[in-house]
Length: 127
Figure 1 (cartoon, rainbow, N blue to C red):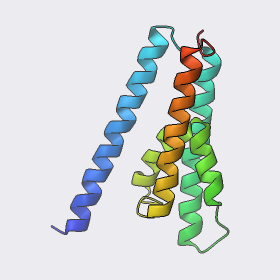
Figure 2 (spheres, one colour):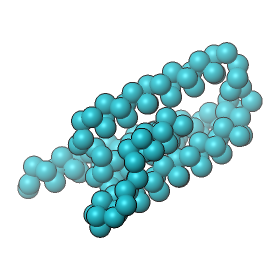
Figure 3 (spheres, one colour):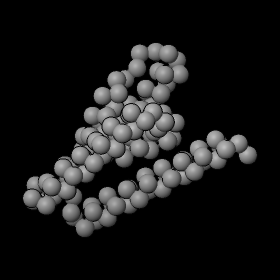
Figure 4 (cartoon, helix red, strand yellow):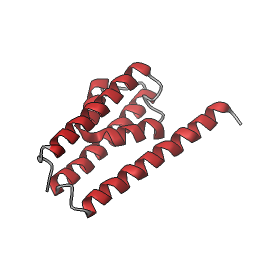
C-alpha cells in the first residue's frame, strides 16, 4: 500500500467524520430551538456556495483555467462556510497542503467561531 493513499484515506475519513459531527450538532441545536431559522438556512447556503467554490477552483486548477482567488475562498470560510471548506479541502484534495493557506484558513475558523460565540453569549443569535 502506498503511504500517500493511506494518508489520503485517513484524511478523507477524518473529514467525513467532522462533517457528520458538525451536521449532527446543527441538527441538535435546531431540535433544541437554539438556532434561529435565518441562521440555519444562511449557514446551509454559505456552506453549499463554499463547497461549490472549492470544487470549481480545483477543476480550474486541473484545466489551467481562471482560478478563484484565495482571499475569496477564505472569506467564504470566514462567513460561516468553514465546515464545507474543511471537507472540500480533503474531498477534492485542494488547498490542504499549502501551509500559508492553511494558516489563514484556521485563523478564519478561529475568528468565525469566536464571533459566533460572542454573538450567542450576548443574545444576538437566540431564536
